[in-house]
Image (cartoon, rainbow, N blue to C red; front, top):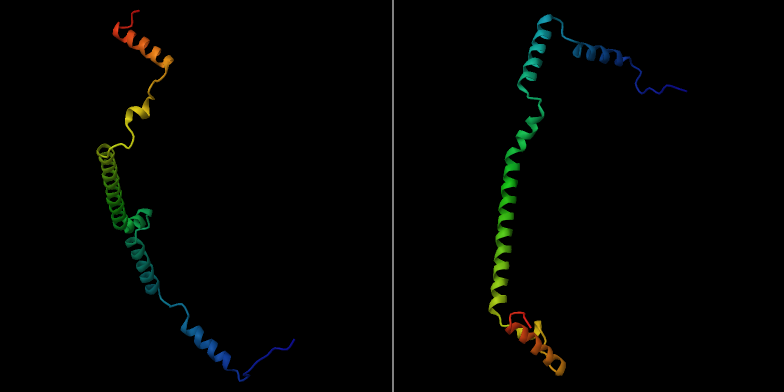
Length: 129
């Protein structure tokens, strides 16, 4: 396989030397001591606890909770109003059919008349024959 090169003027060596010089690690103990001090100061000021994340969400969470409590209160109040209105309407609206005929049919015929007499007789004598 052939190695493809575009420029063969030897300029790559010079560029590589300049880049190495530019990106070479600093010489001297003072630079490394300052770097260490900056890193440790940054670590000390940053709180790495899990509660630090929750702290940022505290206000939005409290606001959302307040909105939910208000919405639940309004919903309960509206439900109570509807329930009360329905109860008043049921009480004040006349029934289309008399209640007694809906609950107990009228007794007619000889057999039912006899039964009515027997039951009525028991009621008058307080349950004694």
